[in-house]
Amino acid sequence: MSETPKPAAPEAGFDLPARPSAPPREGGQRTVRLLGFASATLGLLLLLAMTPALAGLLNEKPLSDVRAYYDAAGRLNAGLPLYPPGADVNASEFYRYPPLLAILFRPLALLPYAAVSVIWGVVVLGALVATLLVSGIRRRATWLWAGILAFPIAWSALLGQAQLPVTLLLALATPLSVALAGQLKLLPALAALWWLGRRDWRSLRRFAAWSAALVALQVVLEPRGTLDYMRIANLSQVGDIVNLSPYGVSPILWAALAAVGAALVIVTARRPAGWFVAVAYSTLVSPRLIAYLFVALLGGLGRPSTSPTGPHVPGLASREERAA
Image (tube, rainbow, N blue to C red; front, side, top):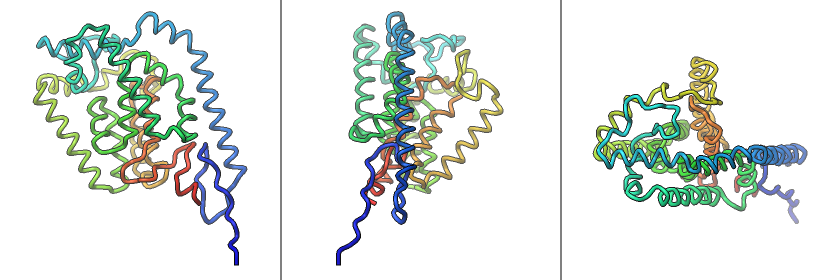
């Protein structure tokens, strides 16, 4: 006796999670796909609207954040303090990150700045391409989210921002890569709450061990800078910016939302969208939230090592869901 054929599963797009025990809700899936397409279109329109501003940035201060990394490494090479007292937190050349990035830049700081800007520009663009490959270039979700985040991606690339390499590390979604991301920029380490929520103690221990090892490496290679970073890593670094964080409205509101967000990451960790929620939290919790930081949301499309099929995120159906 022939079996009743199952309805064909929709392609990976802006899909809702499929329920194997229930017939697919085509209307709801179609609506979510349309919302995804509309969001990506709006993201591209935002990029188009901001093109004159980005062109001005390219003409006046191309790869301006590279200068901050280059000068920080140059200070280390010259035996000067990595974090000079009284430095202007609003200056584009202010270095506000852990010492590791400056330490890694030390060999580059021996080269002319023009050469370093080209080398680092290639690294940044390479990180973007690698993030798309890790996320899955055949996934509709990857390109939808690339469209949604088109402006942050372009802005990060033009600044030469380390946020793009950090995004790749989050997309790799391993204890080592998340630990490294947290030592390049502090807050990405909060994505490790995902392992806490899943009670994946093995991965959490590995993350903690890698983090401790990287901190120890910085203490050995740059003891004064490491101690100074503990002194300057506070909310005074927020500075005077166009701040998208609730911190700009009320520090109390920001702290409350940060606590709620951490709880949300833990509660949703075992759900299909858990990794995406964790990465979004580690990005949006920043009290100094600038639009280019949103590029890290691409890291939420990664496939955590304890979830071989990858999480469900808006725009992505997992392999089981597509096979259902």
